[in-house]
Image 1: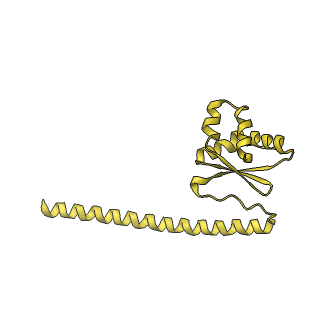
Image 2: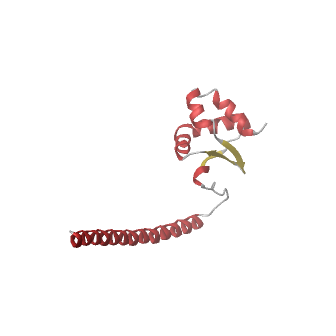
Image 3: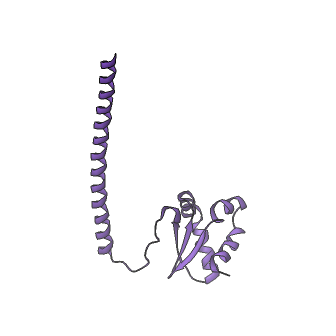
Length: 137
């Protein structure tokens, strides 16, 4: 029997059945080094597990293994990937964040440009419709 179903069996007895059915029934768990990745089927479930049940998961895993494990909740429906579990330096993280911020800024500029074009096209279409009504009428 795999590890995650054993964890689920223990958690089942620690929380109300309705909560278990709602948050845990469709989860999957997988070890990635020292980290237990818990995969959910929705963002809602991910957020609830992170805020309400992550400690229970961690304590249950510790009971079973005798070791503390990092728990990472991942929404598989959003195609997000689990974080890579390595010793990443502060500078690597800082560089990554700066790159992400630059990309976000570029995308925000493009969105603003597209919004302007949409407004222009909507206005133009409205004027053309109004012009045709006047010409017919």
